[in-house]
Length: 140
Image 1 (tube, rainbow, N blue to C red):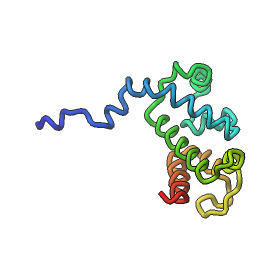
Image 2: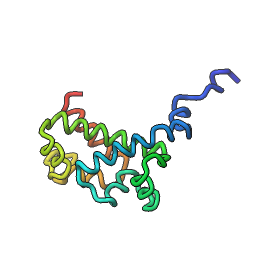
Image 3: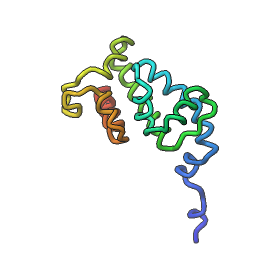
């Protein structure tokens, strides 16, 4: 067996309990800010976070320092941060940017629904699709 096979991968490091614990409080705080801007109801927030149990969600919202998010939930928050950033670059007016997420969209991706409606199907694929759409609109 080669030594290379025994070396921990970047994925292993990113998913280590210590790394997840270190990133979780900041991620929850950032998510809370986005949720406030987008006026998301608690159930919508839980869906976007990967359908967190109510008790876990309540604990993390009350005390972000107690959070220990899964790798999946951290990836979801990362996608939401990218979506939030892209919207605010495309629409520098804060009110317009915050409202965009809830407005119906004629682009084929959205099928006349809002980005929020698409995101609330709960899938990671929808998060990635909205992020990719916005990045393309930005010219990335």
